[in-house]
Length: 397
Image (cartoon, rainbow, N blue to C red; front, side):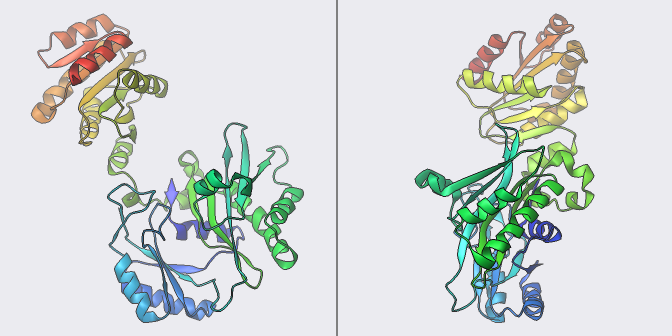
C-alpha cells in the first residue's frame, strides 16, 4: 500500500528520523493557515508547496513550488490543488491533486553549503536480505544515475541474524563523504530510518533527497513509502492512511468484492482460480501472440454471483477484446463452474460484447464442456491449454 509523503514523514518522525516539517492542506485557505502555523513553529519565512499524489517526479510536473510570502502560498496552492499532475510515474492522463503539503524551506536563503543524497531501504529478493541503497547523487532520478554512473550507487546488505551493524552505518556516512557533525548526524539518521522500515512492515522506504543542511543537519526532505498489505492487520493506524482516490478504481472495486485483481495493459481478460494457474494463463495468452489485460484470481469458489462480479470488473477495462476463463475444478466441480458461467452470462444479457473462452479441467470436466456447448450461449469451450490458446486466436482473428 502506497501512502502520501506527509504520512511517510509522520512514520519517520515517530522513529526519530529528522524530517522536513510541514502540514497538509486541502484548499488554498487552509494552506495559508498551515503556512502561518509552520512559521510560528519553525521560524521559516519561505514555504514549499508540494502536491500529494502517489507518484515521483512531482517537481518536473509542476507539483512542487517555492512560496516566498503568504500571497504566493495561496496562489500556488490554488494552482496545484485540483490540477492533473503528469509525471513519468503517473498514467498518461495524470493524477488529480486533492491536497498539498506546506513544508518548511530547509534550503536556507543565501546558503550554498548543502548536499543532497539518495537513500532507500528495501528487500533484496535474490539474496533474501534487506538492503540499504544510497548515493551521493540525490535529487536526481536514481534510474538515470544507475545507468550513467553506476559506480556512484552503494549498497549495504543486512544480515537478518544480527541486524544493521554500527560499522555499516559508519561506512555509509564515509562513502557519502561526510565528516564531523554531519558524519555523526548520519550515523543517527540511518539506524532510525532502518528501524522505521522494520517497525512498520514496509516493503520500501525511499528518501530522495536526504539533505545535509548548511549547519550539518541530516534531514529527510521527501518520503516515498510502500507498506506491506499483508501486515496491515498489525498496524490499524497505518491501514487508515490508505487513500483509495490514488488507486486504480477497478482494483479497489475488485478488492471490495474479495477478488485478487491487478490491472494490466493487454487486450485479453483473464478469470482464473489460483495464482499459479493465473500466471500460466498469462503466459498462454502471450504465447498466442496477445497480451493479458489483467490478473484476476476468483479463489476457491466460482459460483454464478462471483463469476458475474468478475465479468463486470473485467469489462470495465475498455481495452478488453476477449475473456479467457481458465478454472481447475478441484475443490469446486467443473460442472458447477460451468453452470455459474452460464447463469452469469444470462444475467448480464447484452452487456457482454466480447468473445468468451472457457477452459475447465478437473472433476467433471467433460460434463462441464457439454453444458457449455449445449447452453446455446456464444461461449467457446476448451479442455486443453493449447486448445484454449487456439480459441483465443480464433476469437480475435
